[in-house]
Length: 506
Ligand SMILES: *Cc1c(COP(=O)(O)O)cnc(C)c1O
View 1 (cartoon, rainbow, N blue to C red):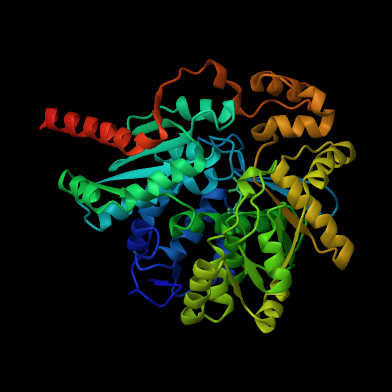
View 2: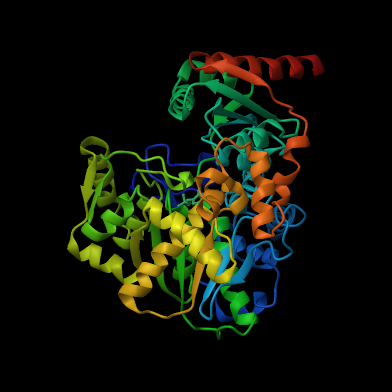
């Protein structure tokens, strides 16, 4: 069963937690019991594929799903649509450092790891709960998540997805990735405004009771696919276990040896999945939490004060540009020994005063398991070049933030434990920044993003990621554009179309 981090809701089944997304009265769902990976479990999957590990881990958490159901979800998610046979690739950088590449999925983004399987879990949850409506997933995106969600939800039975992005406010590549999405249930709308306009409009629609009851009468219910849904967090535990077992299998470490993980962090979902893996018994020494110049988490772990009122910076690692890390709530719930009352009051403080404070005792307990620091923009760009010159390994900006913070960790602690660095984006996903790091601003100035692919590919002698290389030729299938004040009208038009289509069938 799943319980709320704020002690304010009854416990629910996994299917219900995945259907609800977040606790309706505020708070996040966490598993009532964290299962452990027994020696027997580990031996059973040690020689297995990514899918074998995924089936084992998901099965331990989703006991209201049948074994065959989980199997089917995993097989659909991680078989044909990744461009690496291991699904997640491990690249050895030095004697003790490995890069875990989480970006071999269909949109070249790490979000694929969860979003390729979560829609199947949700679709099954709807069946299990005998839900009689169709779900309409609304997404406001600043770029990457939108495409990963569209690709994950396309052609999933019982679900439609509508994605709003700032028209002219995302990269050309990101826009083209979204507007070329196929699938009968996908809708993409460019909004003449910024990301906040999209997000605020979507939030207002969720809160519009009259509109929601109109939809319900016609057989639809709105939902979201954001990263606080347990169905997105759970699949991320898998690659921590998989990468560890791969090092054992390849005789780089022995079963039982501890490793560190370095995680470029934004909303705290990825690193939290690593923490759950540790709690299940995976031997982890330290989790290293890397931030960019939006270093709210670094400051929090160093001072014990979470202070969200600060200037938001647009960095070259935009997927980590976050001031409120939602999944931190789950981590604090666990680290306080599941003290829901305290979590509630901290979240209230954050809401009302813009900050909360956890005290030295808890801060020190956290420091036992987690080490945090940040990298500046200049340090990040220099790291891309330094690492490429040294080892010919090319990192994107997010991964480079992680590498720089790991360098700081090594310097401060001297800890030479085997370390796995999570790589969260293909360098081709952030071509302009990566090329600028290698060849200077002149190399990218005024150039078409599709030209930059070729240029980067030539310099580093590496093929363009398969999810990106044919984009220019793909037909554009979505051309809706609306004013920022008309987002609701646009959604009504889209939904009006479904209603028409449905009535013409019945
Ligand atoms: C989403 C994302 C992150 C941040 O992950 P969280 O789980 O939100 O901490 C880091 N890098 C990339 C490329 C991402 O897309």
